Image (cartoon, rainbow, N blue to C red; front, side, top):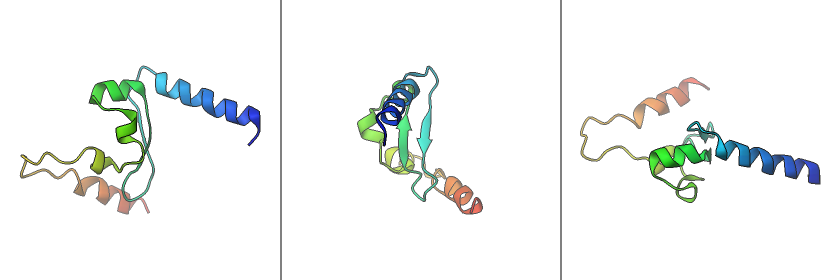
Length: 84
């Protein structure tokens, strides 16, 4: 990569992280891997970037073990299958 492109990527990353809106960017893979989060998202979820990046969405935020009717895992997986 050129020095210009590397600088542009760094600037974009800094801008993305600083936006006042909560953003979470996921890969369209089977785990919905977390690849980017805004600072606002981290504050809202009381998490850290290091604890989220590279993890699957449901590894980072598992269903509530006290909720016997929790269906959080099934619904997004169904949507992922439909999108292919």
